[in-house]
Length: 582
Ligand SMILES: [Zn+2]
Ligand SMILES: [Zn+2]
Image (cartoon, rainbow, N blue to C red; front, side, top):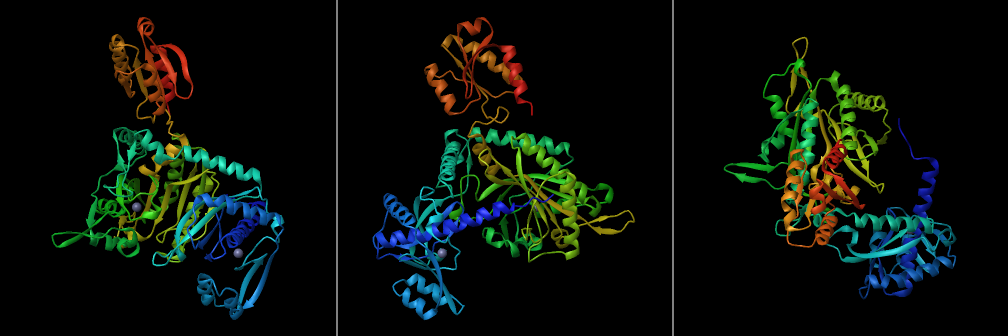
């Protein structure tokens, strides 16, 4: 079942694109009027808005943006028309003679005629499209948001220009909704919450993109990993452990050294050989498969590993836990016969969705990525595998979209992106068929006739990586993790020193039932401890004093609800046991 953007949505997005791109011109127009000596770079429409790059004579700051925005609104209201013209290169050079960046672009244009757009006093090199006139733009539906440095044409050898970003929508209401959502996203930012909740940290001296997990963060990782460990064991996987480095020759055989080098760190010299920090776990699992003769009766064989890999990411794209340089994949490889591929993919889809749902995600977007230009295997193999994936998706009654050419060179794949509570998409599960590694490593099995046959390999990660997934969980829940995931589930706050014994007793009985409980017996006021527990988003804070001790009960404070009253111990325990059932 392929869902497609409805024609109406496509039309709307086209209209919005024209509005955004036209606003980029109007931004440059406003800058031209306010700062006449400015040099102009380029100004495209982007997701949610637009930008324009400038070289200002005197640097501007964010404080200057309201003035520029005001000017833009004035221009919008004055009903300016956008007109396209085709002119000769000579004429273009004459028009832009004081604009070095534009002249550079003109030199590179291959067509004889050069397309320009004129809107009022402002002329830009541009192919369009644009709105017919500023009448089509709502002056209340856009906003300049920030300035940033950007190298001319993204090259650090070029001058640094000033980029002004704006956001724009068709209506004021849409703009307001967007801003509200942004503010909400900011509150949920896992980089800030992660520190507040004491889950992980980054340290300059350790290095960019290398998260350090605190005690609490490590418990959270362990909860996730323990859950997966059981799930996969029950699904017939074997857990394996492999080294963090491997001989360069291994990565030459696998093809990673040739095809993936830009993401691999420089070799480490050990004795006479060179080793690589592993960017992938696959070749190691391949070696386990190859360590024995495999019969069709043994298949499918599934190896799973929490494999920590290291990949180079440019410092500019690093982002909290969601883009890092070292991370732990919940990785697995499935070796099966061609006949088993369909069933295995089906099982994987079912399992992935079950697991994602357990973590509280209900909405998914599924993508089937097809053959890219450069590919391994034959066209026939690809076609067959694509049919298998489609069949599995249809059989599970899953809606999906085609991602044309988005497959990896070694085979087609299915990606599952989860939608969080703000509707943002996050890539998690990936299921990839591989025709390449079985060839490169000569991986076989003995079939029914006693003959050697090429095995099929599937790479798959369900959560993606533990780091990224924790980042997504924090943002989805705004840090208020469900009871089963909370590293500290219950705090017990004794009212006075004499209640400590009772508090410890309760702690013990909860711990026997598998709960993670802290007694907060520091010399601080009860209200301060409660406040602290609220900041840490502890699911339950239990206050115990004379009354509670006497009646074998607790005073319950539920996260987000406050004091919900006194409850008998047994009753409370029953309640949280029920809550924790997945
Ligand atoms: Zn334009
Ligand atoms: Zn793999």
